Length: 125
Image 1 (cartoon, helix red, strand yellow):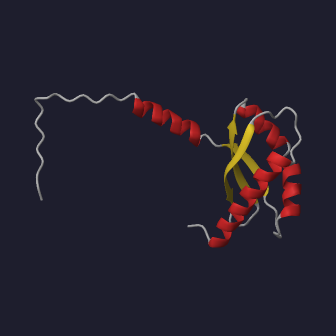
Image 2: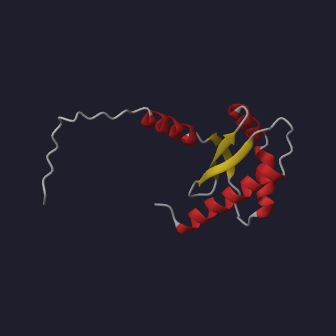
C-alpha cells in the first residue's frame, strides 16, 4: 500500500509533467496528443515511471521523442515542484486503452442464443 505522501507526489508529478509536455515541449515532429495517464514514483523518490497515452500519430515515435526530451522535462519539473530529490523520469506507453478496446470488441462479438425449450431452474431462497 502506498503512503499518502507518495500518492500526493505521484499526483503532483503527473499534473506537472502533463503541463510541461503539452505546453512547453517544442518538438514540431510531435503531432500526437499526449496524456499522462499514471505516474509511479519509487519510495525513495529516485525514479518515476511515467505512463503516456498517445492519441493519433505514431505512438512509438512520439514516445521516443518524449524520452529524448526527458532531461528537459525533468529540469522544468524541478522548477515547478518542491522536492529535495527530483526523480529520474522513465517514460512508457500506456496500452490499457488499446487493451480495453480489444476486450470491448471481443465482448460485442459474442452472440447469445437461447432455445425456447431450455428450462431454467430458479431456486427461491
